[in-house]
Image (cartoon, rainbow, N blue to C red; front, side):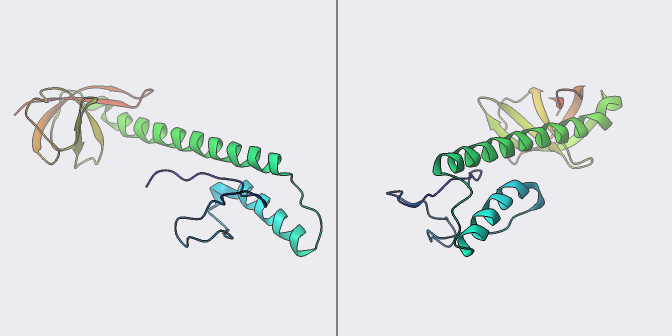
Length: 158
């Protein structure tokens, strides 16, 4: 399942979007603390509807807010991934040349990836990826780290 997306399902839309779980058109829920602004928008809509007042946002405004919230959430996830990668590279910086047992976690045209079990980090196999596939256990040597970029590079030694 891919990432979620905020959408404005406005009255009069010809094809209302249904939530994938309950598969209903009239659906909302409160979410985690990282989604407080979308919750505030929903609460404002509910509050005015229950009070019989006009909606605090127009349809165009709701669509713009939904798009903005999705973009900001995607940007936050990108930063979280980068911080995680950098945090994994930092303790390995002083261990260049060390050898590790790994499991291949990804093999494609974009590259081959291996996971160390101790410490539990993932890095790219930059040398010796021929003939290996996901699930193979191989021995590698740490050749390079770049904390700023979050890169951890290995070469196969077995």
